Length: 406
Image (cartoon, rainbow, N blue to C red; front, side, top):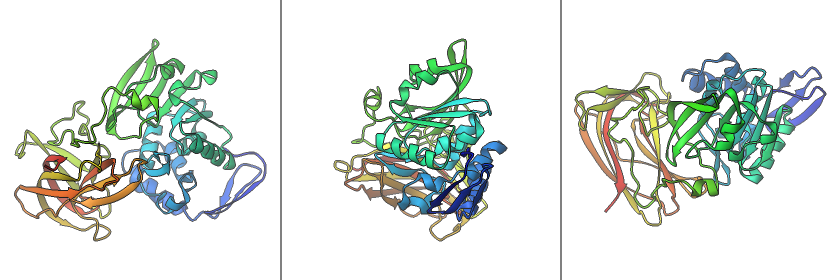
């Protein structure tokens, strides 16, 4: 953390934080062990290895960037609603995006945020300066206030249209975009320094892929990374999308698990994929099926996909899936067991309910599961989660179909 070089005492909900004249930090921080565990289990073990990034993640107090009512969930690896239809990104995603940019101490970084200020705080000790643009005014003001109060003096925040960039401070060595447009906005290309890098999630509303861009001879050279799911920009940018979701006809993309277009081991269409393998031959449908395996209780072994659904018109969903569930046991709790769960959200992306779809049979042969679940009337979107879900064991899956019930 970059701090002011003078004595500052702040009484925080997490304890008494004292910043000395040398800029060192002394704190009675009850969340320190939780951060260390989070980084060890859900950031480092999942592939982030840059020691500077890991240290920044361990030192950044995420609980101060989420609403007070959600502070008990601050050090879980999940997105959390922060109001106005926006979310704070999961810690792994923040660490992953930061590492992919290869931040250097002399870098000037532009960050297009959605309102929490957390990504800017993580970047702060790694680079010379961060220019963060928040897209929602009340969230932007709050983020700027938190960043100032915590002494992140090299972070400069404003509210505005992030896709217009910050031309008076351009060019930037790096640009990080934490909300998803359909295509790269031209002003961001113009404001990226020659040889600079940008990481950005691109694609349809519920089908996005991280791209790492490098500017060469005035043009962006793009490398696709893994699938992801980010909230969109608000207002006109979202309205101008050429391909829009259809909440009256919900469905799943790549439900037969056949497509991995860039061959990187991540299935197209699904995000947050953990401990799964695409297997060839013997599939109930098509050429491939997937296998989740995990030998440590409580570890994430699942994948997710979002879709639009309007609970005012779609009263129920029919869910079908081929399952082969082998030996398993519950994870850290009895609730951690193999299955498929659909999480429903309202128009502000606040969680409404989560419904497990049936009970998976334990057989050595494939079996077709067919269930119907009700959709809450307030639901406007959903995320399907399937896999071991913290349990220990092995499960094979194929041919997932989710559709509106007749």
